[in-house]
Each structure stands twice: as structure tokens, then as C-alpha cells.
Amino acid sequence: MVGEAEAHSGWAARLRRFACPPPMEYCEFCRAEIPAEHAHLLDVAGRRLACACRTCALAFAGRVDAAYRAVPSRVQAMREFYLTDSEWSGFHIPIDMAFLFHSTPQARPIALYPGPAGAAEQALSVDAWSMLIANNPTLADLSPDVEALLVNRLRGRRDYYRASIDHCYALVGLIRANWRGLSGGGEVWDLIDSFFARLRLDGDGLAEQRHD
Amino acid sequence: MPDRDRARLDSSLCHIDVLIKAIEEAPESSAREPARELIEIVLDLHALALARIMAAAAACEDRRLLSTLAEDAQIKAMLLLHGLHPEEAETRVRRALDRLRPQLGVQGVGIQSGRVAVEAGRLVVHVFAHAGGDGEQRRAWRREIEQALLDAAPDLEEIVIVGLDDVDSPASPDNDLSRAALARG
Ligand SMILES: [Zn+2]
Image (cartoon, rainbow over all chains, first blue to last red; front, side):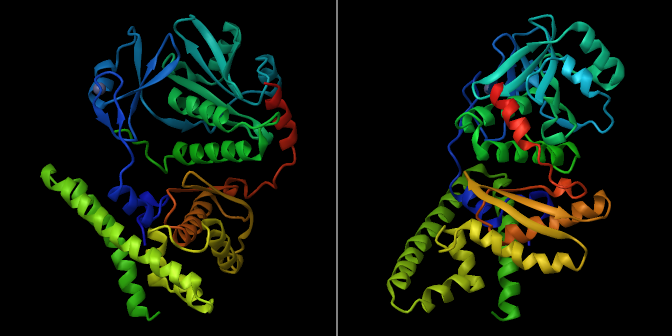
């Protein structure tokens, strides 16, 4: 009844969305109206994502020295990944889920991991990061600040993604918004599962990332 | 419902997407907004009338009227569109899974539904599935399950099925460990 590309939302939802579109969002740089799916620019020093129209996003594309960096939204599951449990423990990240990247303002690699209060930071030793890259050479061309190695080792999983930073912050936001009580509550863990389930679909190239 | 009517309903629903796309991509942007508004008004008129019909049916002592309305495919489609169907999305989805179970069973796919929850228009279905087959085959099953759930709940913005990736490995019980670990973080 519906096309495969849109298999994730029903005809009634799409008709409603068309007839009563959700309120518009605005580009933080030129105040133009932008659709719900839009580009983001990373405020590098503030570690914050800013919503942007296409024109403004393009203006920053390829500029590495600017205060804002374009975030090309993408995710790729890394099928062959080499990281032993003891190497992971050596990173001293207190939970089994984190994203690791090179931070330009701090001039070193760092790991951020989500928690009830947002993202917390764990410094990574340059040696540990170099070892990770040596064992997994595709990490060598991660774009600093805007692209990360996203790790999910929850419930015995060993999933590794090369993910743009907007995906990583989406996970952080999801957890902060839905955390209840001491252990988070059942809901947040289901949402984390769903997040990674969708990431796996996207990372397998079954769903296209759109931001126009 | 006669097959002819069923086919007509299906083709209408299918055509909606094509027409929406055509309007959204129309070169004359001045025509786009009136077209959208026209649809909004017509939908509103129908929604108000349907809501009154359903209220009258619900007030009726004979409960059969309400269930006849809710089960008729043609009427059901309109009730779902306007958010007036008496059954919650969770119930409809659970029923769809129940109907799907024997069909997938003969193909060697076992599914058991766990939590089914709707939040902000997004439905999360936890499925415990066991099946053989390669990645391609599992993706085909996933599509089949997703399609059946979407047909049951076309009013949802998004359906996420959790658990189909784990068809080869039994659900691991170490959740509590990682949950405790995250709580510390
Ligand atoms: Zn702009």
C-alpha cells in the first residue's frame, strides 16, 4: 500500500502532516524558516549544535578554522572493528556507551558519554587514541569535532559506528529528556534500544539521511 | 467489504502520497498554500461530522453499532485519519502481530511481542524473534512485519521495531548490569 522508502510512517500520518504542517523552525544565522529536517552547524567551542538553512550551512562547509563547523549528517556501521574488552576498560569510561572524537579546541582526543544530566567528558590519552586508529585505520579520516566513533557495548553488544556529531548529541538529548529516577526507568532503555535500532538501519544504508 | 471496494480504498490511499508529492513539488508556489488549506478545511469538516457520528454511536445502547463502524475497513480508514478510532494504536498493533504470527510461523519465523508503547506519534514495538536465514531474508521479514503494523496504525508518524536484529541470539539478561552502570555515570 505504501512505498518502501517511506515504510516508517503511515498514510494517515503523512496526509495529516501535509494538511497541518508542524510549526516552522528557524535558521539561527539568517532567521529564514527551515523544515523539520534541516542541517546543523557545530558551535565548536560551545559544543552546541545550531540549526541552519541550506545556504548558511553551505557557507561554512569545508571551513575548518571557523567558530562554526558544518556537520554532514551521516552514520556508517563499522562491521570490522578491533577493540578488546581490556582496551575498552583502559579508556576509563564508566558506562558501556560513548562517543570518541578529536577535539580541536582542546587539541586532544576526548570521549563523551551520556547520562541523566547530559554529556560527561572523559579525557583520552593520545596513546590510546593512536592505538585505536592503528587498529582501525578508517578512523584516521574522521573529521575533528564533527565526526565521532560511537560505541554501544550495552547488553553485550559490540556495535561501532562512524557517526556525525548530531547523531551523538541526539542520543545525549534523548537520555537527558527521558531519564527517570535512579536507574533511568524502563522507558529510557527502550528509547535507547530504538535509537540504536534506527542507527543500524541508517548505517546499513537502508535509510537515507535527509536534511534539505 | 467487497474486493472491489477494498481495491478502491487501497488505490485511493496510495494515490494520496502521489498527489501530496505533486502539490509539494508544484512549480507555482502561489497555488500550493490554497491547495493545502483546502484539504485542511475539507478534512476538518469531515472530522467534526465523524466525531458527532461516533459520539452518537457510543451513546447508543446497542454496542454493535460502534463495533460495526470500527471494523469496517472503509470507515476505519477515515476514523484513523481523524484520530477517532475507538481502539488505541497499541491494541491495533498487538492484534496485527497476533494475526501475523501464524503466517510467519509457517516460514519458520517465531515472533513474540514484548512492550508496545506509543510516544509522541512514535510506536516502539519490542519483538523477540527467532529465525534462521541471512541478512537479506531477515530484512524482508522486517519489512513484512513493519508493513503489517503500518497498515494497522497508519496514523503513527513512525514505527520502530526493536529486537529483529537479535534473531540469532537470545535476549541477554545482563540489562540490569549495564543499567546500574549507566546510573553511576
Ligand atoms: Zn540561514
